Image (cartoon, rainbow, N blue to C red; front, side, top):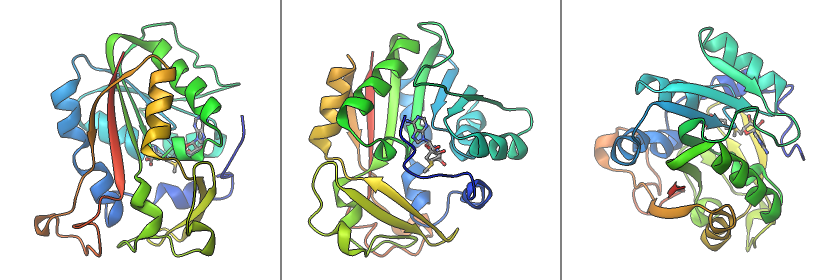
Length: 233
Ligand SMILES: C[S@@+](CC[C@H](N)C(=O)[O-])C[C@H]1O[C@@H](n2cnc3c(N)ncnc32)[C@H](O)[C@@H]1O
């Protein structure tokens, strides 16, 4: 498995990222989407990082297992949530039986996966551990993410211009001072991944900022920076 961003040195820094600025919008509607589409409480947080997303799911009353490929991220997640369950993924295999979870969530992870084939294998492995009728909610950058200025996600890098499927792109998370490399994937690419993994997309939600958010929006109230796919097994 390819490591796009090595979080060994930066996991603590990432652990300071919460739900403010542009990231507020990424996660704002997730609880509503879960309430609308998910029944049952066993949740997998795929690519849990420092556990921000797992803690959000836990606050919604779900029983959460966070998984990641980064030891450093898992260690930080455990420090921030000592009662939480955080598990390492080895060789792309989830250490769980088929149909173990009612839902899976994955935020800001799939754009770290460098090929459509690897994304499809990952989604298929997630689908394997979902029960029939279980739901996979994938939160990811929208195609527009790399083309506009945002409150706290900076994307003004030369390589982000005219990017095409599979190109490396860069972002700077200004609140935590972290620069990350991602891959640019289109809506068509993600839909190909879901289809290849045997999952049906039932909703694509692209949150837009509002004045009521109380965040310093630049373009977030005009152009959606994130896509949230709800797919069912
Ligand atoms: C940008 S962080 C997002 C963390 C968390 N989901 C959040 O929203 O705060 C991306 C995480 O995905 C993990 N990751 C990257 N590629 C992965 C893969 N193929 N399988 C599992 N985790 C992966 C990284 O180690 C990192 O912790």
